[in-house]
Image (cartoon, rainbow, N blue to C red; front, top):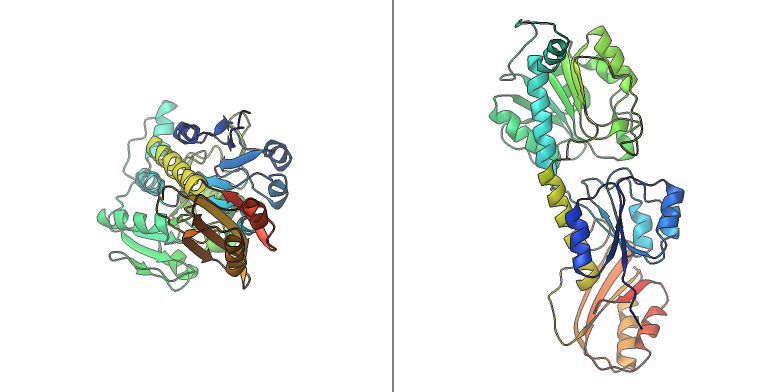
Length: 403
């Protein structure tokens, strides 16, 4: 009887290296260029073991309910706010992302846009395309000595801080959490303090609910006249109508946006924004992290983490599972048991092993507040029925044989 290959579904133009890696270990891979809404995703997830997405596909409780075979979700991007992480954990589905792979790409485009906007290059280029020769130094500035205000001092914000300082900028930052300060950057006590002193404001926050509408009319009012504003984090962070008003009034001198409150789900859809048609505004289609180098790194990193988990049980880089790094072992069977984190679960597991005369060669248990992940290596001989008994232990979420 022919064994059915496990299925992987990759959406949103995940890099081909990811599909190649999954196929190399036996997955039947389907790749689609677009994201999927909830209902189509539910239909597609039947029989799928691995789901790969980028930023637009929402992995909701309803989608997970239709995914009975799903063991892992790969977010081929930095953020995971599009995924219901607690719901994945409750279903025993590990989630992996690429927290560092595209940080350099984002930092480079933001730094490049700061230079272009400060010098008025983008606006002058557009004029020249229309035949207008505007040779003037008015409104063109060096960035050396200018105050850069970074909202969000995480992986991207902190790296931008170092490179901007090397170009002679004064760097200030504001973050909700305590951060290690790099170089000569100065931490602001409040968002108001940062907005009131920065010549250039750039946003690099995550997708938590507190950041929805973070920058609106009140915040633009607090900024210095002639400020340059950039957002390459999340579209819902900035009120684009308020930004457009402040650009028209001259309060905001220039801006660069890579993310928007409403983004097309595929290249075939039309984009619309109140910021269109403004020559001092750079608009890019959510490509800050989309370099060939970054996408290849992301494709390799996330697919490798999925393969490690699917075949070895390693969860070291999972964002919703306890981290377990495992040695390779031969002439043994490795079993993974994911369960609710309640007292006595390990004792119940070991009772089953003892009852079936299974010799434990190694055992690894890590827990979070809600789930436990127990990986056990046993000898190759044991009594029949052990696998079914392990599945039937009360409070089991998911059980499978790794090898």
